[in-house]
Image 1 (spheres, rainbow, N blue to C red):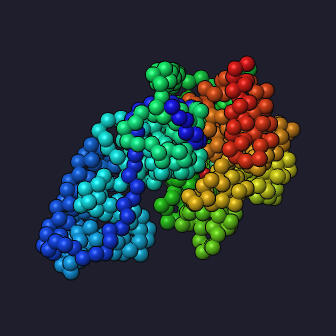
Image 2: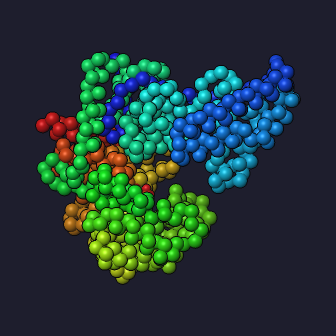
Image 3: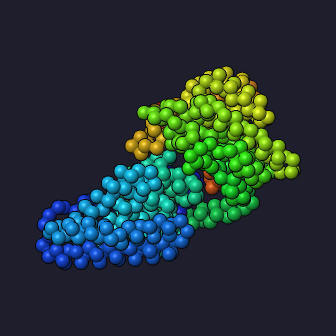
Length: 560
Ligand code: PEP
Ligand code: MG
């Protein structure tokens, strides 16, 4: 038996046979073919057709959105102008593999040059080309394998296109060799409650078919497990499934300290699912998700309708709505008009709203009206409104005053910029609450772009520098009796959630699928335990050491 270590996502455990995701194929060499041009042409056409049929069959099996994506890919494989491009190359003596590679490559460049939606389809074209070339070579197609039975997927990392097509009924667990806790794989695993260990470098040695235990709670992948270990893993998985299907209880520590567990949402229609998972309200409603494709600012009436649905969906509960957060990873055409070299450091969030104050005023009006209308119908929620990307005390004062002026009772700020955390005592003195966005707070503290894979290892909210900033805000909140929530991905990591409570967070908001694991872990520890785990993490010198120190402190307290 050997144990490979990585970062566990959630607390799940699963066991099963490995199926590896094949690496991308190397480009076929540009060498003259030993076959006739007609023979190469025939090979190419047969492979293209077989891939088109295979994609259609997979689409039929998957249904829904995946079917649309796969059918569009099947059409790419049968595109007559692509076939012409391929034929033109086999005629000159190139192999079918090389002709496919070059023809798809030139289409890819054309699509990319078009930009926008079509540009994004370039990756789909690569996927089809890879499948056709793999078939010509008689090797497994790159991408997610389909061994025909449940499996533990082992990959370097998963691209968004891979995750969209994952057959969740068959994937028992995910193991990646690369990627950290904010990688695409980790986010998917949290969202869909898939057992996962990411960044397990040793997993490169795993082979197809071997049985492993993936223990996310321990951040470990166990190879060649004993019968006892397998039985233990199966029992733990069954216990967890039973706990997840039990009616959810409000979030609380073992000593009874309440820690309300809220949902991060982007659509009012997700309310029922979030409540079913035990969300005690909404801690972050991302309003920009409603208007990502809008060319012009939404009207008060259009916004009001959306907000009324949201508030009615959480009648009697707390609902924290974030004002439009435009810019960088979430651009909005009607708010981000400048061409900036560093949009993450530009006119974004509250800065963009201030520069378009009528848009801001309209949104506050729509929210206040929706609040009043739903209350009038007896469907009201406890509406809180907060501004994104607040950097200065002046901005905190501005947005709080403006929101109150529009009839919003509770107005607060997001703490996502280190300056806001460092001056939290002064920030909180002029506003009603703070909510820490750990995704951006980590990005700005570590100077690591949150969407750039090559710096993903810096994007770790466990870093003691990030935790120290969270502690500043928590301490200010305690001193002034001002609520301090957490609404970044960090709150979805059960152990980190405990540490955040120890640092002073009073509520935690996360993707609804993460609620059960966080609830379960909090229930095992007291507030004193949380504070001890926080102290241990703060005393570490890097993210991995902070995680390990908190885990050790928490396991001592669980055992006690
Ligand atoms: C954050 O930055 O942590 C946050 C919650 O906001 P978003 O992820 O939408 O930027
Ligand atoms: Mg943010």
